[in-house]
Amino acid sequence: MDSERSRQIAVRFGPGIGTPPNPSLCDRCVEVMSVHGAGVSIMSGRNSGPVCSSSARVRELEGLQFSLGEGPCHDAFTSGAIISEPDLARAPYSKWPNYAPLALDLGACAVFAFPLQIGVGTVGVLTLYQDSAGTLTAKQSGDGRILARTLPAVMSAIQAAAPQTLMTGALSDADAHRAEIHQAAGMITVQLSVDIEEALVRIRAHAYAVNDTVAHVADAILAHSLYLGNDGPKNRKSPS
Image (cartoon, rainbow, N blue to C red; front, side, top):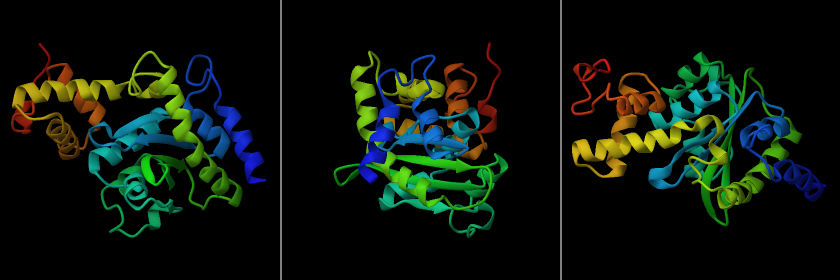
């Protein structure tokens, strides 16, 4: 039964995914899982971050985790285990003290994170969002495990077939800001004479400090309306 369901799910991610008018990778995950939202993130050093999101709201939820450095995605990656929080409002304060209230403000009531593994290594995370509290059904849990096994190969195939890189190609649909984040980091490396990883840390730290998303901070840097010399409020100025 599991092998047949695996085949049924795999065919949903065939050629053409992510190209108009076909749904994106994350849209397909929403359809398969019957959830309100889905996001896929890559966890690989300096390239860590959201790859695709099923909506603008999910894009914010995914970005929060990388701005704050906490959330189900991080826990699933570090533990290699499925992370389930069926009721964010009742989650222990110590679990995600910064992420949980902000996620609730964005309308996420339950979150579930499935590590994406190749062999014994975890390369990314599929995070599912529900607008109402409650656990996943047995079928959803089973399908989530199948997706976690299927997605790494699908993502690799998309990357191999695309003329662009993973971060700006078919997987990035609504998350084209991933390219902007690395462009902004490149500017910071020059301005502050730091390496790329330090630049990304500074961008994320500033986003957290001003309660903004990493994507918005990157846009401001590229527009020359934000400089991270000291991360103070006087560092903002209107574009000329």
